[in-house]
Amino acid sequence: MDWELEPWFGAIRRLQRRGPGCTGLAIDEDGATLGPDVPLVWKRADGYRAARVAEFGVLFRHTFGWGGEAETAARYLVAIAGALGSRNLAKARSWDSTFPFAS
Image (cartoon, rainbow, N blue to C red; front, side):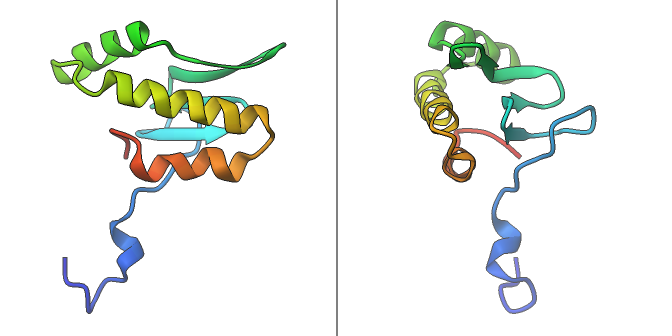
């Protein structure tokens, strides 16, 4: 990347908008998804629920052929769920920049 021609923010990941065109991580008031249809955090009547390590490990193994960072990613999802539960969408979205994998 030519830093003189492209600003630094051109290199950071961007959250996606939830829906059929989503190719990365989407975080909104309804939770978080990976791509158009893989729920990672979802809204329930009693708050938000994050995918568990066992569920996430399966996703990692099927997607990447290994489950190495599943526990790390699951901790991020718990933090995202907590921020959404506190009605802090900006904080929930801030976790995207260091999420183990995303667009």
